[in-house]
Amino acid sequence: MPTVFDAVNPLPRLLMGPGPINADPRVLRAMSAQMLGQFDPQFRQYMREVMVLYRQLFQTNNEWSLIIDGTARSAIEAVMASIVEPGERVLVASFGRFGQLLAEIARRVGAHVRVVDADWGTVFTPERIEEAIRAHAPRLLALCQGDTSTTMLQPLDQIGAICRRYGVLLQVDATATFGGTPLPIDAWHIDAATAGLQKCLGGPPGASPITLAPDFAKQIYRRRHIEEGLRPKEYLPGPGRMIGSNYFDLAMVMDYWSEQGLNHHTEATTMLYGARECARIMLEEGIDQCHARHTLAGRAMVAGVEALGLRVYGDVQNKMPNITGVVIPEGVNADRARGAMLSDFGIEIGTSFGPLQGKVWRIGAMGYNARKDAVLVTLGAFETVLAAEGFKLSRGAGVDAALAVYRQTAPTTPK
Image (cartoon, one colour):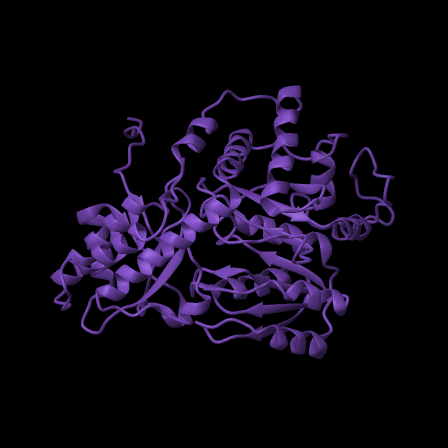
């Protein structure tokens, strides 16, 4: 007899970990729209609209602002696979697990990788970045804007200018921060930035916004031995052609997104609809207002956590607004507490990686979940779970402290 399963019908969850989060219902509705062929004029128009929308979100004039089919890691790899020649020097500034990931991807594409580390729970000063650039003379500097493993937010406003001074390209992984904190690409002189939908943008994982500065894009074409303005109609290996990644060849992807529409892959139709709606919703709310909503939710979460007698992890002055690291107190079974949050309240929070495994919980408030009700419900459940673990606290203090933050601030909620 064939094995038949029930229809997919998961229990409801409030996803308050480091991501993914609950997708905005408007995004899910957009993703249920009818399929179109990838060269249907309607669909090509939606692609053009996506480029316009993400230029605005990235605050850039970059022509090549588009979507990569795949989760955020795919966009990171696409950039490195398309710009880095084997043996070229790449400097990675790592302050957590995802800085380590950047180094791993760079090695896999053949780079000669140099890593400068900051202690987990801290970030880099501009002076330390400049010192590392002088010491290693890389072609490319890669770093995260925010690393969810440590919840730290790296200031970037001076890094692009430093890179320009030394002729170094700058690649930023903004997976965990894009939509939740400022990232003005042109003002900060960032050459390439990549992101994901599943965190501050309020969408599902599976599509990755990307933007490339004009000179960076030219170097990608040069890397693929294609003279500017003389792009071939077909992509077949031949004399002088480099054979590397096909799927992650951004020269080919850009030609697919261009007005020429040269065939490369079949666009993930529903994910493009979702990415378009994520951007439309954020622009409807207002970029500054969206950032302010994330900041407010983060402030309320910190206030609530501290009122419960818990310690926020790391350099609080440089923490991400959308994720709060909470030091697990002595005597509390961390996994059992997380399990109770999920099984008793339907709320997911995260643990951490590497040296922070079993030492830090990570609680998010981002995207569609950067809302007052989500923050207060999470803190109320957290208090109950901690009390059941025997942790001494003042009942109601966490919710009261978070509510006070919201009451002191003008409403900033999704429309």
